[in-house]
Amino acid sequence: MGLDFEVVDLPDADHPEVGDEAPDFTRPLVNEEFWEDRSLASLVDDGPVLLVAHPMDGAFPATYVWNEIDDRGWTDEVDVVGLSISSPYEHRDLLAERGEEARLFSDPDAGVAEAYGIEHDLDGMTGITEHRPAVFLIDGDRTIEYAWVAETWPDFPDYDEVEAAIESL
Image (cartoon, rainbow, N blue to C red):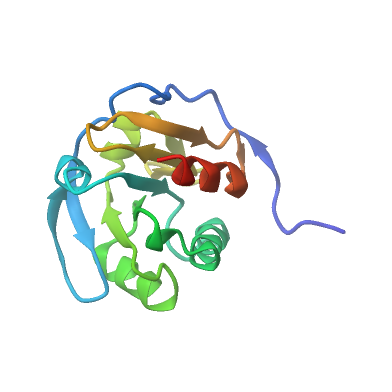
C-alpha cells in the first residue's frame, strides 16, 4: 500500500517531562460559541487538564487525534484542551465537527510550542512553524503527570497509555 505522504523523523525535542512544572501561557481559548484570553494556570485551578498539541486544523493528524478523543469520551473524565497554530475561526469550525466538549488554544505564532519545545518548522514553507503532536496531562499544581511528544511525522500517541494516565488521576 503506497502512502500519500512521507514519514519524516523529527529532530529531538527539548520538552517538559513527567514531574516538571508545565510552562504557563495565555492565549485565546476557543469553544463553539466564543473565545477569550485564558491562561493554562486558570484552567488547572479547576482540575487536571489534558493539553493536546496538534498540527493545524484540517491536517489529517489533527482530525485523527480529535476523532479518537471523541470516541473515547475523555472530555467526560478530564478537561481536554487543544493547542495549534490555527486561528479562533478555524478552531470554531473544528469544534463544530469534532472535539465535543473540548476547547482549543489558538497559538498562531507558535510561541507556546517554542516554550514547550514542540515547535516544528514545515518543510518548504519558510517562516511557518506549527506544533508537533504532543500530549501533556497536567494536574492542579501544573505538574506534568504524563508526557508524549511525536518523534516522527506523522505520529500518534498510544491512546491506551493516555487513557490509563487519565484514569490514574
